[in-house]
Length: 465
Image (cartoon, rainbow, N blue to C red; front, top):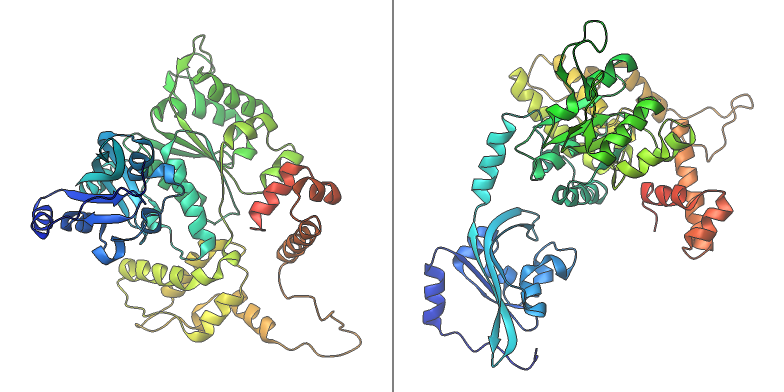
């Protein structure tokens, strides 16, 4: 491809014609810069021409690499796509779905640019998903996950990548962080969205029942047994979410692993296998490495499930999102309770920022809901509407300890839960050793007495450089 060859000047009359047609047209030159962007394409992608023209396409769209852009693939490799569905995000983070024709432009046998002709199906796609969700248990999508901090947005972006395949997913995070929201969003964003989404808490039932619930049974297998399909069969073609999978016995985990590997199950008391097509999304509420060390999770099952691993951060690691979450929950319960609560007082806002939120987002929602149950008029939530233990927490945080010989407290000791304090110390110490070894993971792991896998998990958990 000759860089010196350029696309000839386009007369204004042709630009008017391009703006009059009802399909989007986007043309880039040999340098990957946008040179034609018609009215319809601007409407489809909700971007002005000044946002696009004369800019490199990688600056405009949220592509991870050039391989994700069909326009750039057409330009650099001559690839042609006909009537191909594409879902992508513009620089505003808006999801767009189109049916495209993408192909290179040539002059005297040399590629001088590329063109994409797009038909918008974003609204059709959204309506289809919404009608499907009405018939499914999975109701959440990524749009409903609240938070604008980099911490949560990075997790959302990683989870969105998981919608493109049917690989198993392991979601881990503390209780109340919203693991099921991510599981449902992955399902609803995938091509399995029209199929069932079934969720089962593995810790909610005794082992004697959970096996039959998962794999089904045949008549006569045990007293009172009937021909009954298990959750794997019920979720066929869709997604099965197994919450707190580390609570399953090792023998049941082995049976689960075999089902995933062979893509078939056998009902209790049956003699034949049944083929299944199910995507597994598993969750754990503790560090998976800790589960392995305590033998709560089989190592072979862990590797099978963690093809895609997603760590949902605790609320204390993204406190900047608290204000947005509070507004969301107040709006939710205003509608439910027929109230018009305008917000929270500055004093409550300060308390929420100081609180460590051991129950995470779930605790915050319950606190807002509880406060709104105590409100008689359309007033802001103040300290009198909060539980007594929370108000006591604020007075403890604001109290100045007396300087006596009998009540000595080291000046560096924070007023926070022990688990949080130890986690911060662990993070800082790992960062120090990493810096000492200039980022060498193997040497750092050796000094810390950890496996590489355990160290890499902690690097990701604490978002260390």
